[in-house]
Each structure stands twice: as structure tokens, then as C-alpha cells.
Image 1 (spheres, rainbow, N blue to C red):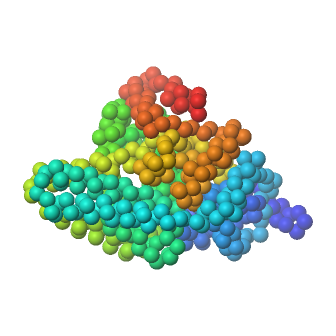
Image 2: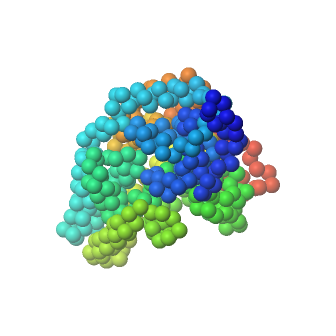
Length: 450
């Protein structure tokens, strides 16, 4: 630490020492802030601060916070400035885009699409319930299960959006919509979703920090996971034992069947978070009440079916249809570049573009993908309503081209092929650890034209 012109300076090495719970310092535009006491109150949870502590986090802060958040920073300023603070050319251009989008009102203007989406969710659920209660035909009950799955998918897109920004201007109504569409109708805790998804965005495709790549014993996207890495999200070791090796060896065959029932994991994760007293969960009572509502009405609806055969068919149909959404979440990242280690705050654009993949589709199919088809754009600008992602895509592509960043965009079919290819490559490595495949050939192939 040093003083110059009455200012106190801290080196990057000394700043990096303040990266533990109770001692969290971050730098934003060269000013250093002590957020140790704020971590537990941070609206985005403590994990983003813990994962990026001891670094300059300007780009991540710009990506996740509106302009109104800057006025709150001074209360955390500890008097130090980051020594030799510089801004890369790609960060300069990235921040210019954020400023331009803000001036255009894109972050604040959410449009009326959310009300149409809420209406479509209500219609799908109503039709599903009507089919169960007002028909005695088996095929109608099967279709009703499919409609329930479609309703869960659309409510999932709303939950995803509400985890990034306020989808309704009135905060109380927005919160009600979150609990209704997430906890009550889908059985998924919005608190769990926000915690999990924020960690994913901050540490995109880090094998140790990104929970969206931590699916053992069922899946391993890289042979690096065979070293039994420690999950910093779940705070446990991800053991690559004989049982895990066996399952991973066939993961390219089991991927789609497992995705059909991946919803069960989300149910379990929701209960595990809400039942964990060690972790802070805002509005825990509301979250639990919302889940209880789901676990009352859904089993009751299933019980209205005439026999166990049709009940099983209804549940399997609803879960399997929703499995499409789980596949979509995987397509955007499984075949992209992964890394081992702590996420770094000063290469925001590099990490987000390297770890994400866009899916080409016509505009009339946007409802199907829920914005995930513009994954690179979404990861760079997570606060941007999905209705604007197609509009800004050319600007993002231009940014990537100018700074030699990857911009991978493939069809839905190709994305599935790449994902299965990545899983197969890791499966073959798991079967024969004595002579592993030297490279992920799928990754090499996609980036020859990315």
C-alpha cells in the first residue's frame, strides 16, 4: 500500500488478500470498497461478492446494476484506490454499449409482453386442469399432461427473467408474480433459482464455481472433473468414484432420458435451500408457503385421474415436455469452453463469450427458446429484457469481431449434436482413463466456424 497526492493506493496483490467471508474488498473503476458487512444484505446474494472478492469487478457491476446503484457505493469506500488501474479496450467498448442501451431506455422499458406471457401460462394451466377434470378420455389426460409441461416451461421463462430484473413495475405485484409462477405453479423456489443462476452468470463455465456444470454422478462435460474437484457452490467434493465413472461412461445415451426427469432435482434443490438454516434466504416463509401450495394442488389434481396408469402417464408427460427446457439450458454451455479456477473480474467479456453459445432461430420461434437462443447477448447484458436481445445481437457480434472474441451461433439441431458430442468425448475418456482423448474434438470443430 502507498500514498500519492494525498490518495492511498493498494496493489492488486494486496487487494487479492481480502477475499474471505468477513473480509471482502472489491474495486470498481479503480476505487476500493469494503463490502464485508454488506454481503449478507446484497440483493443478489453473497455468492457473487464471495466469488469475485479481491479483484476489480467493474464490468460485472455494470452488467448487473442499474445506474441508480452507483450512488450507494460511497458508503462502502474504504479510502483506497487500485494501483495501476487500467481498462482494456474491449471493456471500454462494452461499457459504451451499456451506456448506449441505457440512454435508449432498453433496460427500463420492459414492454407489455410479460402480461401476454402471464396470460398464456394461465391458459395452459387452465386447459390442463379442465382436461383432467372434465374428460374421461385417456388421450385427453395425456395431452393435459403435455399442456401442464408447456405451462411450466413458460412459467420458467418468466422466473428466469424475474431473477435478472423486475418484470412488473410495481414491486409487490412483481414479487407476487414471482411466487405464483415459480413456487405455487411450478414447485420451484425463486430464491433457489436466483442464488443458483447468479452464481452461474458470475462464474460462467468454471468447473468449480458454476453449479450449472456440476451434475455428477450423472454428467461430466470435461475430463477435468475426473480429478474430483471441489464445488465452491455446494461446498463439497465432487467425487469421481466407480459409480460416477460408470454413469458418466454412458452419459451421451442417458442425457435425454435424464432430462425428462431433471425437474425432480429442481424440486429437491428448492427444499434443500429453504431447509438450510446456515444460508440466508430472503422471505423464506413466502418461499416455503408457495411450495406447499404446489405440493397440495398438483398431487390433488393427479389424484383426480381415474387410475394409477393414467396418473403415471400424466406425470411422465408433464415432466418430459418440461425436459425440453432443461435440454435448452444445457445446450448453451455444455459444448463451450470450460476452465478450472476462480472467476476473474477483469475479463468479463472474454469469459461470457467463451462459455456461451447462441442458437439460430427465426423470430416467430422466440417464444420457444425464451431468450436463451441469444445466450451470448444475455450473458453480457443480463438485465436486458429478452425482447431486445435480437435487436442488439448485431452490435454484440460486431464487438466480438472487433476484439477477436468467439461468437458461436449454430442451429438447434447442431447445438444438440455438439452437446452429445461433448458428452460422448468425456464418456470415452471416463471408460479409458489410462489413455484419455487428448482434446475435446467437438469444441475444436465448432470454433472453426464460430
